Amino acid sequence: MPKIISICNQKGGVGKTSTAVSLASCLALEGKKCLLVDLDPQGNATSGVGIDKNSVAKSIYHALLEDTKIEEIILPSCVDNLYMVPSNADLSGAEVELVSEMGREGRLKRILSRLDASFDFVFIDCPPSFGLLTINALTASHSVIVPIQCEYYALEGVSQLIKTITMIKNNLNEDLQIEGILMTMADFRTKLTQEVINEVKKHFGDKVYNAVIPRSIKLSEAPGFGKPIFLYDKESEGAKKYKELTKEFILSNATLLNSNR
Image 1 (cartoon, rainbow, N blue to C red):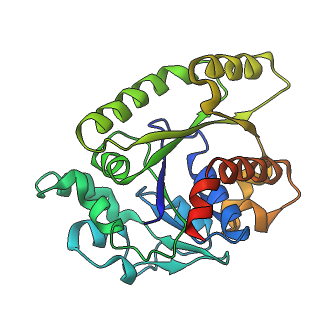
Image 2: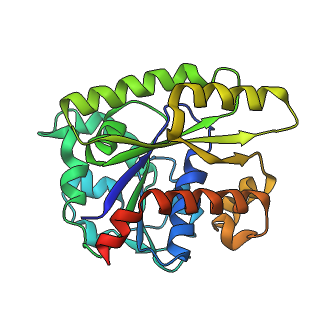
């Protein structure tokens, strides 16, 4: 079974989708077969890899609520080796619809358990909330990457997220681990950025990635063109930092990757 990793933070605007798209696409360009699951009704990860979210025939909604087989939903992206389980506005009512379903917290886990074993990694782009969709993602995942914006109140929201991860681990998924903490939207012209990074490292130690993602116009522009940053502007500072993150990720998963060969 491929390793499944959620990209999760209940706060919006922290670079969650950029991280999911960039890390998955960079790994794919490195020759790793990846699947990106868009679990956000906004569908930004879907459009970020060149798929028109408004024209997809079936989305993750149909797998979660109508038991459509996942192989009927997976689409190729604009990046070789990167495949997509798309999302769109259909998913916006799923939180309410899931409430009455049997085994509602484990639906995504069952769906992903049927995946083709040729995938190396599955990344889940979570919605910015702690509803049933996020609980499904964390229940299905082996680990979670937490993007944290370099801002004054960064740690306040994360403490709630850690409580949620612990709750999932204790009740629904005992194998869930923190894969890493990623600092995003850094502006090194300000003293605050370094202070926040130091504070986060104090709390999470070696779980914090060395790569720090800067504020970047190119990262903001790329989704509008339906391209990951590596296809839009691979020489940009944002692309270089996500490349650094990818190298760290590969190194920390070297044992797994070697066993898959």
